[in-house]
Structure formats: structure tokens, C-alpha cells
Image 1: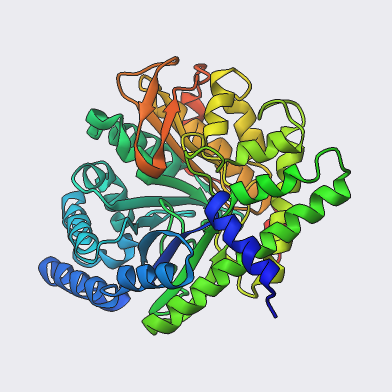
Image 2: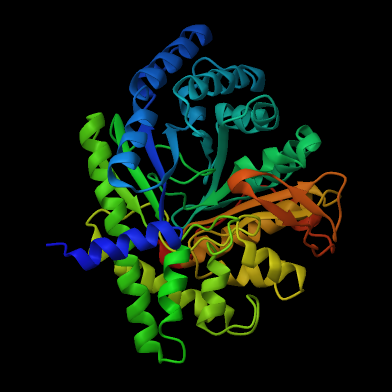
Length: 454
């Protein structure tokens, strides 16, 4: 039973500590839309998306109003488009027509983003995969709500270095195609290793082929709640620290479970997972960096940062799995630089570098996320950074990702403005020594020895 104290405590979390449900994401399978005729394919996609999602936003708004729980985003994830368009799309330009159709559908049902303009190429690329990847710069330049991702590696298959090399160039081309808006297109493009099938968070969301025809996934967030809870155990030992994080994560996840259940029931769509990630926003008091500093760091990036983040991530997951039987997605702590005021401040004072962020990704949920770098950075260097991050994911059997933004026309010391939840970011320096010869090798890096578990 829930007592009055717990009701009051949850209300305080919502009103004063930035507790929210970050997203309700409706996953929609487009496998039954496949057609060899491009016009017919686009028609089927538009009708299915708008048909299944027509009540998503209004339902989310009703739940928000009735329960008093903020639901920040309503989103859609779809089957990777490289699979859906394979029969009809013979060129990158053909795929761009699908991007425009999806964008039109997203506007019709009024969702924030639609994710799944994606390709899964961890072992090899079909012609359809390559055409979709080559279409990404134009697709993100001519749409507003499309998010794109490419999975280039996994623990079981290794790293497709041909895809890594291509993706470095695609990131650069996307930056050029959207340079009038501080290369904003790159903020909607993620390169993955071990991408999960059920991730509700953008920009990396897509609906895996193992999923049902439609499914509701919910992403909860509560950095501000965890920060406030930790203020009460200042100076205490690690036992009290860990218990506090774990109990707080439990409460936050229960809110997500409640919203997920209601959304599932009202939309008549099966419930999938709750992703219990601590996802920050640019708002003051809603920062993962501030949690780590409350734990005892003068600034994020100081010695001890990776250990503190590892502990935070583990306790968040332990608390979350007690609150829901269906925890999935990414689940843990996000460290996107542009979306976290504490991270931005740490970069600005020189405490946090790209190399330290890479070390932190070994123990957090995702990877090098929302990091602005100089526009002059070469495609080969971007590919090298992607390869490093993919290797961390492959060897550690975890999801890692790269969302780099080479801001055309800007350099270290300047700032890129993205707006909304995407925030703003200081341009971070990048190691300029070349890796071109390494990246230029054809083929793939083999899977690690511990992948052989059949």
C-alpha cells in the first residue's frame, strides 16, 4: 500500500526536484508495409504510423493531467528503414522520400521525434544499408523530427570498419548539410555498438525485428531527485550513499511503471519496457554532473570520476530492477555534454576532456554523447573516435554510442546552440594526430574471444 507520506514525497519530487517521465515511445513495426513500389511503400508507412499513433499525444496529455506527472516527450520508434526500403529504394534519394513521409507523419500526430531511420550493419552492409547511410545527411537536412542511427558493431560480430569509415564521412557531411543551424543534424544521428532493440530514447531509438507489431516503452528520468536525496547523506559512508541512490531509483522507476501501464491500457498496445536512465536536461538542478559532484568531486573530470559514475550507474540499475520486472533499453546514467549544465561548466573550466569522457563511457549507459567538436575535424578522425568507442562496447559487452557534432565554422573556445532539450555546448578540442592509415584498412575487427558462448 502507498501511504500519505509517499504521496507527499512523490509530489515534492515532481514540483521541486525535476522528476518527470522523459518519454512515452510508441514502437511501430513497418514490416507489413514492405512493397517494391516506392509510392505504395510511402503510402503504407504514412497510413500505419498515423493510424496507430493518432491518440498517442492526447493519451499522454490525459495521463499527465490526471496523475500530475510531467511527460516531457511523446515519440515513435519504427523498424529500421534500411530493411523496410530494401525492395523499393534503389538510391539514397529514394530513401530520402521515406524520411520526408515519416516527418510528415510525425507532424500529423504531433510527436517530438520519430526514430528508426536506421541501418544495422555490425557484420556487413547490403546495398540497401549503404544507400540509407549515404542518404542520412540529406534526410536530416530536409526534415525536422527524424532521428537516425547506425549500428556498426557488436560483441558477437566485431566491428564493421568499412561502416565506421563511411559513418565518419556521413557525420561530416551531415554537419555540412546543416551548418546554418550549428550542424544540428548531427545531434539527431547516433553511431552504435550493441544497440538495444527496445530503446525509447532519441536519437538512437528504433524498433527491433524481434519486437511485436506495436509496443509502449517508457523512459523515466530523475537526476534532480537523486541529487536532492544525496544531499541528506553528506559525509556518510558508501553504504548509506549506495542505499540512498538505490531507494531513490526505485521510487523514480515506479512512477515510470505506473505511466507505462496506463498508456498501454488506454492505447490498447502491449507494454514493453521501462528505461530507468538518469537523463539530464539543460535546466539547473537536473544534472548527472551535479550528482557526481555531490558524491564528493570538486568537478566532474577530477580523479575518481569514473569510479563515482560506476557506482551511481550500478545502484540506479539495482533500484530500478526491483521496481519493474521489465527494465530494458539503456538504463543507467547518461552523460550528454550539451544537455547537462554541470558537464558544460566542467568543460569550460578545463576539468573535463574528451579523453576523460571516453574513460567514463566504460561504466555509464551510452557513450560520447552530444559533444561539439571543431568543424575542421577530419572525417578520418571522427571515424577513429567512433572506432574507439565501439571497441569499448564490444569488449565490455555493453551498449556504447557516439553522437559527435563537428560544428562547421566554429573552433575551440566557441559555443554551439541547439535549443530545447538539446541545449548548448562548448566546442571541445580533439587530438589532431592522424589515424587515417588505420581507418583506411578494409574489413572488420573480429569479435573478442569471450564472444564465443554458443
